[in-house]
Amino acid sequence: MRPVEAPAEVREFLASRHPEALELALWLRAVVLDAEPDLSERVYRGWDGIGFRHPDAGFVCAIYPRGPEVRLLFEHGARLDDPDDVLEGDGAQTRHVTVREPHDGLAGTLGAYVREAVGRRVLGA
Image 1 (cartoon, rainbow, N blue to C red):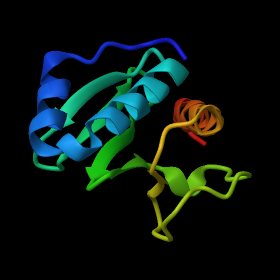
Image 2: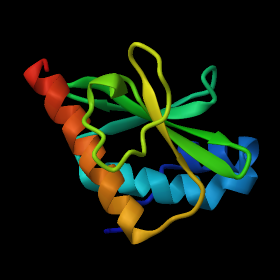
Image 3: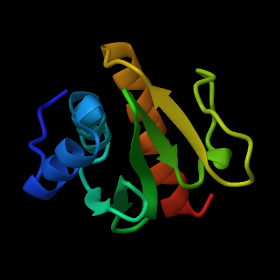
């Protein structure tokens, strides 16, 4: 995974609101952006998270720090295949993955989910 430097706004948001999850959230952010470099990010203070938008797919996913954990929420996660059985939630639309520690295997899995989420949205699937 290539390092992806966080903009000051992102780093400041995480450091001030979620210091206990700072490093894990920055790792997860790098995983998301490494999987799909066309994503742009934005701090959503009202949602208390960082959202990722694709120019063709629209809003795809977001990072939500929760204590020492970080959730990666997929806007249309209910449509995603889940062969690794990591998606949580049972709503009609969203699903999330709770990340408790960084590791390469998880990075590969999450990267595949991010790419699938973008691909499905671009294709309208």
